Image (cartoon, rainbow, N blue to C red; front, side, top):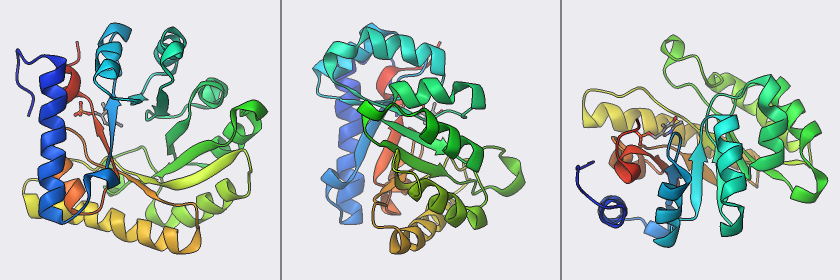
Length: 231
Ligand SMILES: *Cc1c(COP(=O)(O)O)cnc(C)c1O
């Protein structure tokens, strides 16, 4: 959990320690869990500090802010994931600057990202965001819509289908929290059976990463516990 007065190195160590413990309990290798540092609202210098400690993958939610940082930090060879809601008028900037987009939830966005991906950047890695909370959450497609979207992504060589992302609402108990991640794992297994490129479940944040690891997450998105509270 986030503790004031820790320096970046202590925070990163604490998160890595939690990941190791959760993997041990789940009988999984920590190598199978990527840590994405969510750097929205954080200044480039704070990102640099984490890079010097070995962190290479970063997640951003706001396109204009992200593009400025990606350009300012271009010398570092980082991998950038777009994790915020995708607006149609921002797809070009996402396609041009990011390595991954984790929040694809409709066919129109698939078409635009593919049309706008520059040929020299290689395929854009895509996760389908799925809504596991029914009507209480707007972002993400319904579970029944995953397969059609997956086929649309796979039909475009500019895109590479990698898996699913979800941001489930916090649940009261540990069992309830795990149950929702288990549903995501089930959807992932079905998708992976039909699409060979699928290898990623993006689930788990500062507050629920243990439950996500227990249920098979392969990528955590952690902001607060790495950077401190957002201003
Ligand atoms: C902000 C954000 C996170 C990080 O959340 P923390 O609670 O700060 O770790 C993860 N995923 C998404 C999609 C976010 O927008």
